[in-house]
Length: 93
Image (cartoon, rainbow, N blue to C red; front, side, top):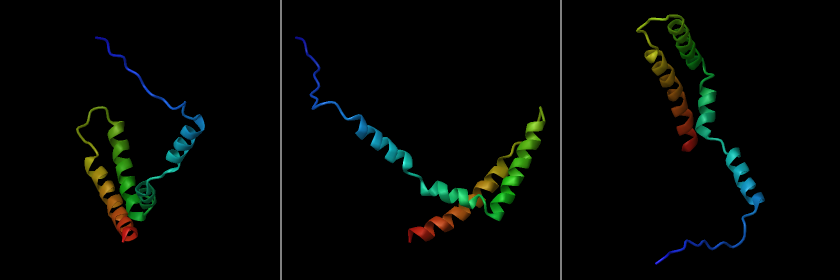
């Protein structure tokens, strides 16, 4: 017994419709990312980012070191997320 796989089509999809859908998807911007970018410009986040970048430069300049920048990274992410939480939850209410 032989089974054939057949697909029923109702015409070819228009390329215009596919392009419109792709354009709509590209236009969508995550509001969380926008708020994060704004918060990264705040004074506290800028200071935390400067400490992180200084640590990364220090660690990157050494060939043999056990130091990493985990603490500085967490400090920066905490400062940014603290700012984001206040702005996002105020707009959700």
